Length: 165
Image 1 (cartoon, rainbow, N blue to C red):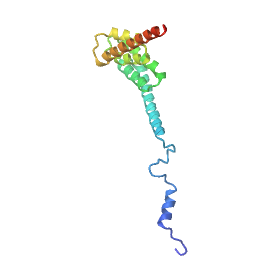
Image 2 (image 1 turned 30 degrees about the vertical axis):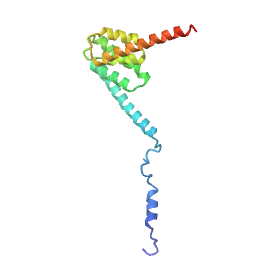
Image 3 (image 1 turned 60 degrees about the horizontal axis):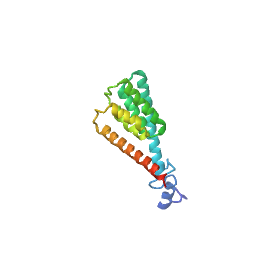
Image 4 (image 1 turned 90 degrees about the vertical axis):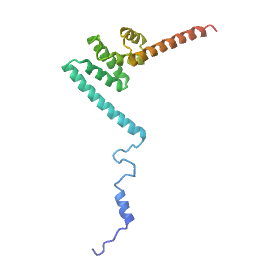
């Protein structure tokens, strides 16, 4: 074509690069901080867990099952948000009421949950109720409960001793 000017390689590369993002940058995700990626991954993970929880709740409405209740409680715990901890506890306690023998071992999920809430009396009652369970979870919960009671007793002694000065 007469009169057409030829573009140099550098000019062609500059024109092509205008539509592309810099190397290592996702042009579809403008915020490139590490925290942004982590929060996006966490929120998508939480959304998946919430969908699974909704499906399990639907399944429970159709057919009561201890196994389904335990899975649902584990999802509530995995979400690691305080608003779901009460639901997890309620779900596990219902499981124990429906199956006092606890064939599905809901107690092994409930005991650490109670300890994490600081509900030592409820955890102690649960451990006493299933005192024949020598699983690692229940033994560790017993040890943690003993440590918490010991620390609580020491704290009370320090308060009493500190007031005399």
